[in-house]
Length: 143
View (tube, helix red, strand yellow):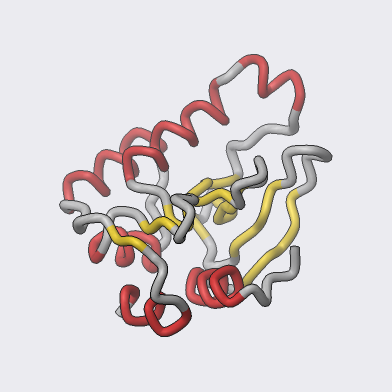
C-alpha cells in the first residue's frame, strides 16, 4: 500500500528492504513509545524511503531510534531548545527541520508536525502520514 501510494506521486523514491518486526519492537522499547500504526506499517513494507537526492523522506528504524535518543538526551540540545519528549521524529526536510508525530501519555497521534530548528517552533504539517507523503512529494506542502 505505501509503496504504491508513493510511486503514485513520484517515480524517484528509493525503498529499503522491509523492517523485521523485531526491529520495530526495538525502536518502541528503546524510545518507550508505540510507533503510530501507519509508520509501523510503512516500515514493515520498506524500512526507510529516500527521495531522488537521498533525503530522508522516511528514516530507517535504526535512525528513528538513534535520532530520537539524541534529541532527547543531548545536553547541548536541551540547553538550546524546548524538550523533545513529546515528539517522535521520523523524517527530515533536508534543511535542518524535522518531521514528527506528537506523542503523549495516551500514545502517538496521526498528525504530523514539523520542528523548525531555527526558531524551535513546532507547527502542524499534515493530518496523517499519507497526507505528509502526498504533500511533501507532490510539492504542495505548507512549508
